[in-house]
Length: 228
Image 1 (cartoon, helix red, strand yellow):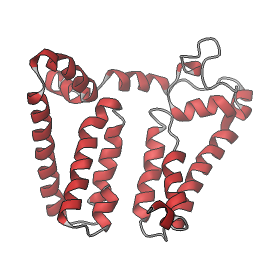
Image 2 (tube, helix red, strand yellow):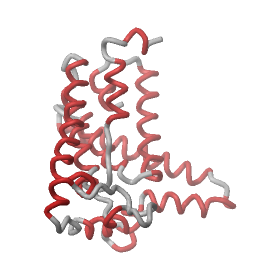
Image 3 (cartoon, helix red, strand yellow):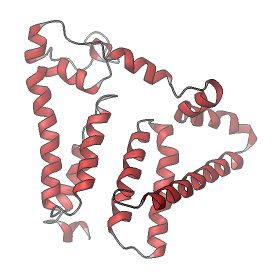
């Protein structure tokens, strides 16, 4: 959405629709997955890329105020009987902000746990070379293998350094192919997607194939089919 708003000259109604869609995702997304914040920040950075600082500040303030108003309106409109339960969802999604207002720190339970997982690395040469072949714990499939949720670590334990590098290369090759198919028209978008992939795999496991596949199928060889 940020790319479309930045590079396409839409009429007012469509531009407004896209802006409201972005705000809706920005508000609801963190409740479903707090890594949405990473996407939001990268999208804002992309949108304001190569813009004047003063205009960037004004737009940031405007969208922050609008987001706050929307969140307040949503909470206000929720009936009292279910408001307390719904607020728990908001508290989960925006835990860092609640913690900052209450404790003065932006930490969260999941971020604290994630930081401890960076110490979990293979202790056998075989694992570094070919991996252990486990993505989930073979004894407790509901748990991650070696109890680490770090995406790069999980890939490393699964098929070693060669497999990890091949997987990263494959993801970047998809991005490069999509950029080529779209005529290198939006390079900053694909750079942002690549950065998103790297950051997300420091928190969990990320696979860009479903996202990039849409672009590969729709641009430009299948454009007529995708446009109906």
